[in-house]
Amino acid sequence: MIGGILVRATVLGCVIGILGFGEDNNLVDGVTFPRDAAVVAEKLEELEAGKLIEELEELIERLRGKGYTTFVFERPKIAQAVQEKLEVEVRIESITEAGEVLRGNMGKLAVELGFLEDEAELAGWIHEVSMELTRRRVRRATEKRDLVVVQTIQMIDDSEKTLNLFMNRVREWYGLHFPELNRLVEKHETYARLVSKLGRRENFTPENLMKEGIPEERASRMAEAAVRSVGAELQDVDIEKIRMLCGEILKLYRVKSTLEEYLRELMDEVAPNISALAGATLGARLIALAGGLDNLAKMPASTVQVLGAEKALFRSLKTGSRPPKHGVIFQHSLIHGSKRWLRGKIARLLAGKLAIAARTDSFSGKFIGDRLREDLERRVREIREKYPKPKPKPAVRARRRLARRRK
Image 1: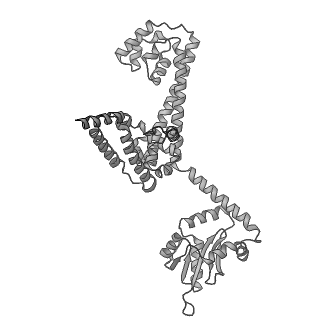
Image 2: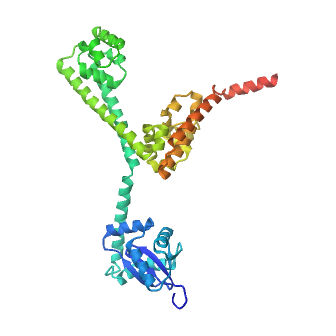
Image 3: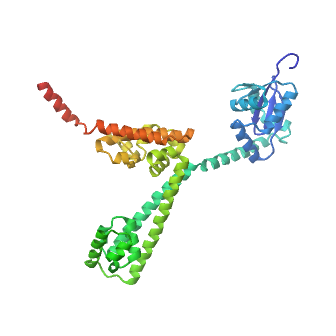
């Protein structure tokens, strides 16, 4: 107290330090930052987060020593931190006259406090600190684990495309020697493994095939096809090159399998609720299509429902055709495993649950995936019981109404 009057000081932070202004909006004290842009950027971020930095504590103590008892802040978080730790009276004003004075005379105040030698240096200093703040924010953004999820699922998809491309070439190439094998073995990885291990069709005997895990009946059919094959006789060097290529393809399959396991672990860490509801692969694709977990969490359920079907959606808006009922979430077993007339209803239900899961993963971190999945499965059963048959088409319904009127 000074002369029985409550004395207020406005405390403000800026790129030069923490400054205190009296009731007449004149500078009464200030604690400057070091002339290191990285240090200043870190301190400004801490202030923005509502953390109490040492310069702020020092200034408050010095102002209290001068008789100031009430402190005005423009940021609520900082005011709350000061009140809780230093036990002083605080007030919050979103815009203060002292703040206008500071922003309009920062160069002059920097020289007065000895932070700068000339007011002209202020623009360069602000630029330096701003660039450091930008670098820190970009670095933090790229460190988000959901971006690792995006890169991992894209790598898995790219490896899948590469494997399909290579295997189509291998099937055509080896088909010159043993064309019948193409229809007998559908799985690419099994085809590559058999060709890599056995080589020439003469080696496709029941014993060799069963050693590679082929069931006895299928092994017999394949061995018989090898004996009756109409394929050409390739030279040893040709067969070896095909086998070498199959060996490299098998390595890529192992890499893809490792990535898929890594993705499951990553999704359990980043988005456990989405993973529990949709599976790691589908959940990761939704995050990738949205551009990140936070973006997915901000989307309404109707947008989540058609993610991955943007072309069909825009075509329907342009031509007036039917909009798509689902996008990439069609890959979920509850949708693609259901009857055609139920898929739209289940897709809408699943999208709603996924929106809840994404928001929970992004904002609260609680695990409610099991409860969401149980509720989803229960609602899907109800839908299947309620709609065992498709609804009649409009023309059929109109004929039925007309028939009832005639009766």
